[in-house]
Image (cartoon, rainbow, N blue to C red; front, side, top):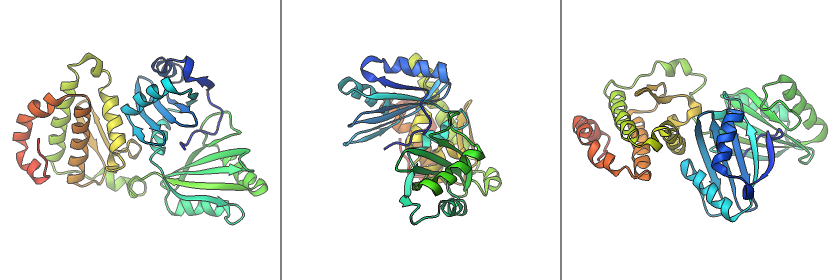
Length: 327
């Protein structure tokens, strides 16, 4: 089951049988700026995350499979043909949308904790000590009310509450109220952790001065620039390049944590890479190259892999041999 905001949706009660999903996404981008569309039936669940001007990610789940990224959106559209999906739309503040896109990667580390046996305030202090990046889901009074408290490196950065009409909130009042309600009415808790580098928060200054050897970043910049130039030849792909690349990075973030957009460690823009993490050179190269190779193959850009990279591969032959890569 996906994690969704506890507040009322901005639009709710829609049904996929009478909506055009691509048109709905366009409308939501114009109307709400950033947020996500949640689709659900007894057999299927999916979400499309967006911000103004671009799609950020998609997730599709049924009993047989889970699909992430660009393919998930196609799977949702396909499922809507055969199944009546209930559709709710949530508006998310721009500064929080990338947090929400990573929540689907969160791993449950504690579940079904009860106020009968657990002190909720003590649990929150424990999450602070353990420097949790993720969330604590709270069900109050048998599910009649609920909330989510968000953590970044052990610090509470906001929440989502069923009684709050203002959207994802950082209000201290709401945090105090959820403590009060769980004490009086009882509660159940699930703790979920986003798998990002543990040094992300406390040692941020140290990370910011970390630099990869001079040959690695320029090599990857040239690699990404060549791929970008190839995609720009196709008018349809031209406008979607950064969205497709970011979605692929999100998809690979379970394996290469520095690609997680919430960690804010790696970014490619204006043909330049900014990198402030602690990933090894091998992780950095493999993460970027694997992502682009997969995306190129998915888009049918075999010419890029077979022809366009010849001179680049010759130029960086020693580095490619060092990292056991071939083209």
